[in-house]
Image (cartoon, rainbow, N blue to C red; front, side):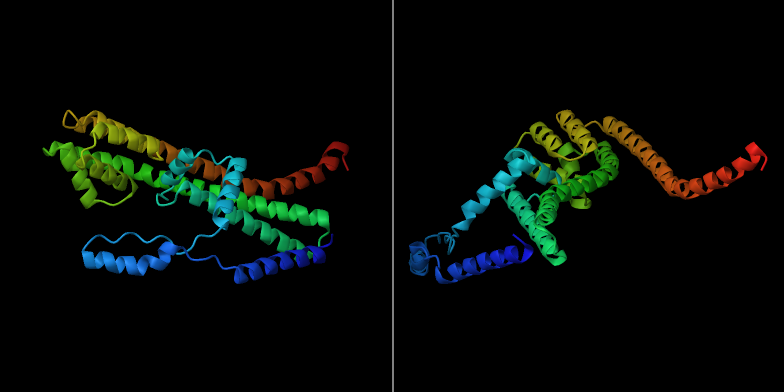
Length: 301
C-alpha cells in the first residue's frame, strides 16, 4: 500500500462517517421534549424546577472513554485516585481523571494525524510512513503527561519561594495574640499565592466543622511541595496548643537555608553547563596546534 492509496482510504472513511452522521440524527429524548411544559407547570405550582437532562447523548462517548482508559493504562497513567492527585498538584483542580484521559487520547490522535500527513507530504514508503506515524502518535501520547509534570515543577518552584514567608507571617500573627484560625483567615484575606490558596481552602473546611489536624494532614498529603507539607503538618500539630510561633520561625529559617543551598547548586550546574560550549570549541583548536608541533619537537623537523 503506497501513500496515495492510504490517503484515499482515510479520506473515504472520513467522508463516509460524515455522511452517516449527517443522515442518521440521534432522536431527542422524551424528557427533553416535555421539559418546557413541565417547567411551566412547576413554575405555576411554585415548586422547584428540575434540572433538564442533556438534549442529546452521543453513542461515541462510551467508546471514546473506553479507548482513552485503555490508552491511559498502556501508558501507565495510574489509577483514578493517583491521576486526580497529580492533576490537583498541577493546579488543574477542575479537570477529572476521565477528562485527562480523553485529552491524552486527543493529543495521541492529533500526533498520529500529523505523522501521517508528514509521511504523505514527504512521499515515504510504507515502512517509513508507519515509523513516522508511530513517532507522531508517541509524541502526542506523552504530551499530556509532560505538560502536567511541567506544571507540577513550576508550582513546586513557586511554593518553595512562598513557604518560608508564610511561616513568618503566621508566626507574627500568632505572637500578636491571634488564634490559629484567625491567622489563617488573615492570611487568606491579605495574601495571594499557591500556599495561601491551599491554606484558604483548609480554613474554609475548618470553619465548616472539620477537625483542623485532619484537614491539614490531608492537605499535606495532597500538596506538591514537601516544604509546604512540613508547614501544614507543623501547623496542624500545634493547633490545639494555640500555635507555636517559635517552631514556625525555626521552620522558616530551615526552609530559607535549604532554598539558598538549592539555588547555589543550580548556579554551579549552570556555570559548568556554560563552560561546555567553550571547551568544545577551544579544545579541538588547541589539540590541532599541539599535534602540528609534535613532529618538529620529536623528530627535529
